[in-house]
Amino acid sequence: MLTILLVEDNTGCVSLLEDIFSYDDIPARLAHVTSGEEALHLTATLQPVLILMDLGLPGIDGLETTQILKRDPTTRNIPVWAVTAYAMQGDEEKARAAGCEEYFVKPLSMRTLGNRLKDFLQELENEKTESHEHAST
View 1: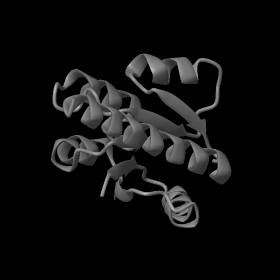
View 2 (view 1 turned 30 degrees about the horizontal axis):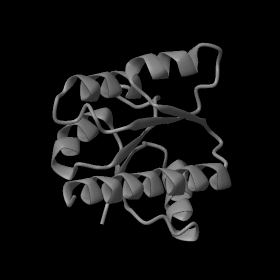
View 3 (view 1 turned 60 degrees about the horizontal axis):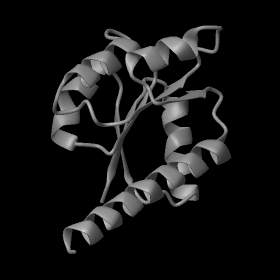
View 4 (view 1 turned 180 degrees about the horizontal axis):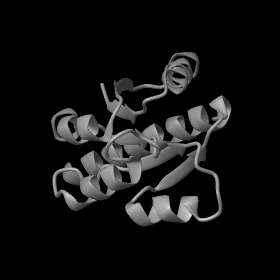
């Protein structure tokens, strides 16, 4: 089963994401860590297909964690989506400059994020099917 890594220190947000995964029947396993340091330590081992990154983390913040992941050849191709309370002008630009492909502001819309996760996983499945078809021809 595919793994999505959630890097989040707020238990309420973790519960909300767990609810999205169960209620929207997201076809992936949600792994969870509470710090950038843990994310850096586990990402290469877990090889998640996606990282949901809180930007306001204790220790190494989400921006720096994303930058480190994007510099590492073993993790640079894993998409990172910012999931954050940072909603001031310029915050999204900073996140995208650090390497975040998408930007979701808390409080999260369960429907919006759930639908986007489903679309993302379907896109992955389609790419896998297409590459398999090309390989067999």
